[in-house]
Image (cartoon, rainbow, N blue to C red; front, side, top):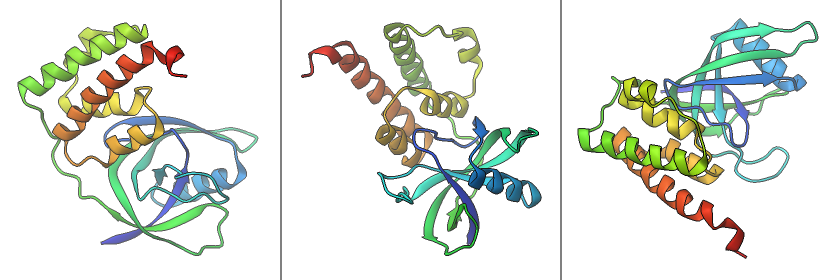
Length: 201
């Protein structure tokens, strides 16, 4: 079943199911989009632009977010927090009069949280520690160990400093195990190549 969805194309800002994304909304067209969403179902589709252009083309896969916290400022700007609900696939862009873009989208059914095998969980935790140490990140590993598998995997996918294409590939990967495996590979790749970035002339 398809639904109409207002979309916010924002490069590098990915939302994953069951994760939270804080946003500061200041452009007039996106302030209008937030006002519209608040008056309707509080939902916004986060999607990445695929290259340049005005308007830029969009990746097919994004994530629907529900506004769970909002602060409206006197000058019309908003600070808000989106909670990821489910991935969506754009079927077609709609011809609309609004300043913000709207699409017809297929929204994935939301199932039970997925789990990893003990080996997969150990592998992603170990690689995360190695990656964080190499990058100089301070991490509360005690808190990390208490996260459920989906929060761990999607949380890393959302905040890790991978490039746009890598993060889009993570969002598009079907299932938690393939996504966890891809994260491990990306951390190994970026971990190796991040050290000798200066020599890659």
